[in-house]
Length: 113
Length: 116
Image 1 (cartoon, chains in turn cyan, orange):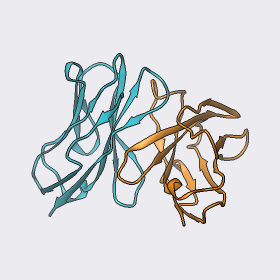
Image 2 (cartoon, one colour):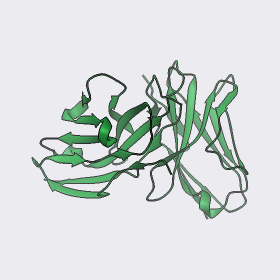
Image 3 (cartoon, chains in turn brown, purple):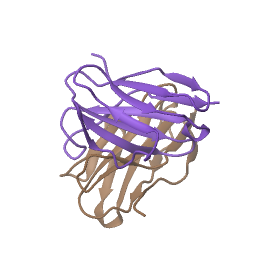
């Protein structure tokens, strides 16, 4: 079945550590890719998105993601996390150019001060 | 500059009752999407609506669930005769242009439905 996979559902790290969250998808053809973040008690917010062009995408709050078409991946990175980055992170794929988003199960990230 | 609004934020229903979830899109947005998040799962697409039209309901359960987006007023997701398995967080999103292919979906805070 077509899907979006996020591994390591729970991630705990210290401030200033580097963060990388993996996202792999199994849809063929053209896709649009998104990372959303949900801070505690808040709604989903868009971190960054890729539609076309430079596969290295810069987002808000120092996050970036790299689209590697050959690996069907769109991994999220941040070189140095802060306590305020504690949140749940969702990768989402828009397959086949249609209207629905397919989400991964999310990564719960806890940053220890 | 209101974002996507959903109400109620929390809803408790007994088995067999009806649940009505409301979503007001961002100003100027006429495309609305509903997603459901079960515990320990990612969000699953349910339905995509434009004003007065259901465009894609491929993710909706065949029975008891319905959605509308009238010309005036919010979009409504209606669940009849709720069962415990309907307990979940229901998220609404809206976009300016049609489809996620060319536009970004902005999400509301969600409605957490608990069925006793």
